[in-house]
Length: 372
Image (tube, helix red, strand yellow):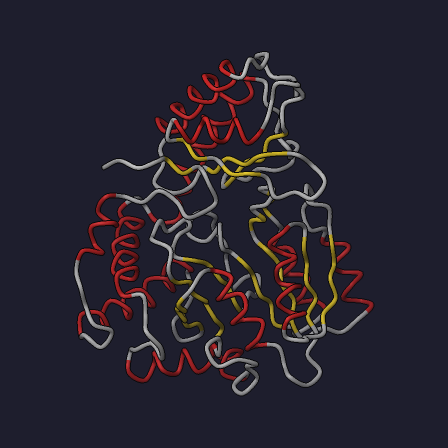
């Protein structure tokens, strides 16, 4: 049975072979499953391009936000800890919410949703205060903005020895990032993003020295990143019930990532998807939220048409009836919707979506080209 096409930031479309990998049943202590976990941890370090003697991979049950909370609640010192949160959208703001939930001292450096984090503003913040941790989102999927993670990392090296945390949820596996060169200590992503696995677990690529120096700082039991890592290192097992089937699927997804040419190969397909989408939506008259200074290829935000016949709920529902699933906007001040280019999607899928969008626009009696 063929399901809907998901043009979203996740969960995403996956290959048939990734789905089929879940058809086997293994216990959490089964040797084959333990070997699968070992393979995943090693392969993710390879995808990240880091030295296993300096970095480790810590998988965690749950969505990407679980890994975010694990990093924040485990790696900020209990005494004197202070986080500089760089936010230009909903996902950067989520880090601030996590800090508040754990009563962690932090400063929120807020940027407009449609703009990149500005390095000169970060520099000024570092001059005015002292921070133990700094967080940033690589791809802010509420808008599609790609933030200057490398530039911020190099800036931190000049001013501070603060721990650098990157939320790479929707970029890891498709947007190259040199973690070592820009001093990233913790990077977080999820199984159901650019690696094209199934939802159910997330993972942290962690600087070993920084991680083990934070032992005893965790504010929780389940999210204790050091305890989770130590358990996996000692016997290859999760402390609590792991998502066995999801991890079997993820192993297959990693194999398929390598077959496609790794990060560069996957980026090539996503860029082609983005190019087809951009050309088609421009011809239809839709206006992008971001200006031409942005070159992201993960997700694209579009303004609502300035047409009295346009209603997003109707637009969304009718596309869904045609098995095309887009995503509502997540902006606070601008009415927009989002279309993702990632997951097991190809240029032909993007062209089919464009045909369906034009069909729905005609059904809704919208004037084409659209008035943005």
